[in-house]
Amino acid sequence: TRIADIQAVGRLLDTRLEADQPKPGNVTGFRLYFRPLMNLEPSETVVFSLPSFSGPDMLILNPSDLGIDGEPALFKGLWMKIDDTYNELVLVVVCGDGIPANSSITVHLKSEAGVSLPAFGISDSSTVLVGSNPVSLTVSSNAIAGPVNATVLESVAPVGALIEPAKVCFCTPAVC
Image 1 (tube, one colour):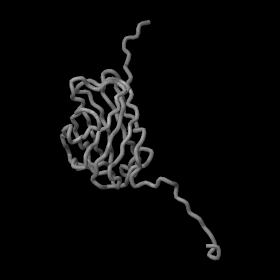
Image 2 (cartoon, rainbow, N blue to C red; image 1 turned 180 degrees about the horizontal axis):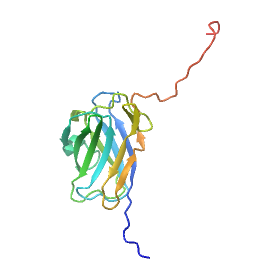
Image 3 (cartoon, rainbow, N blue to C red; image 1 turned 135 degrees about the horizontal axis):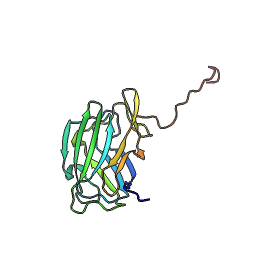
Image 4 (tube, rainbow, N blue to C red; image 1 turned 90 degrees about the horizontal axis):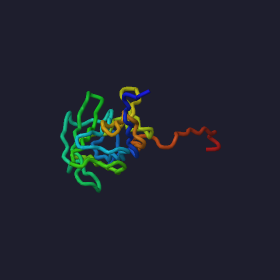
């Protein structure tokens, strides 16, 4: 039996987000990290879906605005608001050679872009509240060598969240 169509599978590894000034609701810069398991060709995209982040309705980011750490200017970026509670950062590969598989990429979106962290913070499980519903921060790619469906970021530094579980201790007044 002949297989008519096989969908290539890609993967984005080491995905994480770290805020420069991790305070809920504040405008800040942040770093997005990823390592593609597949080659990324010119004009293919890596999409970071960042629900509850706020910023301008649309902003075209130059490579100097993105501040790619340790790499030549591989990207142009587009910050785009999908609706009032959902924002998405789209990074488009524009260099002639694309990005080879297993390249570690750090993108620094600077505070001058005017993007704010979610008002209710970010949990260490890569979720934010949209209304009263927890929604995950995700990354995806349309790479021909292996598309990646929306996948939850592996690591997000918590913002405005309790890192240790809260404890309540009761004691009698004579002992306290």
